[in-house]
Image (cartoon, rainbow, N blue to C red; front, top):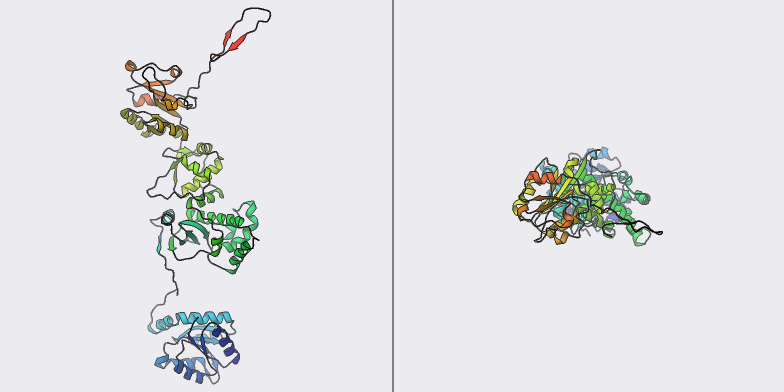
Length: 534
């Protein structure tokens, strides 16, 4: 409660009674004067914190009374609020009086009276000092929450800022400004609880809502608010009374957050500021979305057309982007979307291949990858058909392994891939990838065979070009029978030998030919057809 003293100089008993009644309820000490002469005497006597002065007084004007009061040294610091039915016409007369800090046009409401008095008490001293000394006054008063972190986006990206706050598990409000809008991200424990923008057009979000949420689109004008209001509090009350389904509202808030976050990442944000003490709206305390940046960016691309140009005849290759200190919080991502990410590495993969591996439609896979691209989890590059071929090689010999890597790293030969020196790594790669060609070093003392770990892996199913690596012919044991139809290169081999071998189309498994054996002639004689296996 305030203990400030307010002196009211007004000849209207109605005004004096109304001001006394409402300001007393706010805790102010109210002193009343019915004319200018009494007002001057009381101002010198009680030295009030503020004088509410009527412009039209019996036998004088408010301007004359004001000049008389401020000529006394003990009253030169007192701010005045002038009240009149003449409005601007009266206020202009006080332009040269430094102590007049505001006007209150009659008739006024109790709320307007309280706001004018509170504002004058807070800013009066600064305005008087500014008017007297010719100094500048701040544009905003009472800013108790200065940003703990602020900057622009000339050298820093929005993803880096949000990752920094997520890694530190910070709580507060991140404010991002663009040329036209101000977007506010509310964080708790580093994760996004909700995204709002009072300046954003709700219609731009409403058109992206699915059919089952279209009936809730009118609520966007309330949920986009960055603070509390009676209407937002009404939504919270409806949820408390189980009139409004919180699950539906949470889905709406997630769509809202996805649209606003995508807008920030696809437009050109200018600057940011983080306010750690700024409390989130009460709505998000009830129905927070609690998601990661990647999760909300994927939602945004799933709800919108893809950004990537999918020109006919051009394939987009996706590569895992390994950033130093990269945040990989996956909250909000579905299991299939996380699985899609696990299929990515340093080898470019086209969208169709990744969709098949993840068991999802191509359009969905493309949208998810676009979201990962905005989060900088992946990179994309345009590939020609020859650039999409992948080679996996198992070569324990270090010298020859380096030779194969040289083939892979050469530009223009149309191959990418991996070289491993142990069987377990080879098995993992074959589970995660579908290579176009496989180079496998054979093992064995009595005969050369596949490594044991691959013998039942289906590597010879004809889906790949399989090239076997054997020792020099002079020291090599014979090939196992099931391998004699495969392509074999022998050590020492060259780059040209590798390229010549892997460019051969995959060899399909050879099915045994039917064997026809005649039976002895007789009345019930028949022809028996068998296969080699039988």
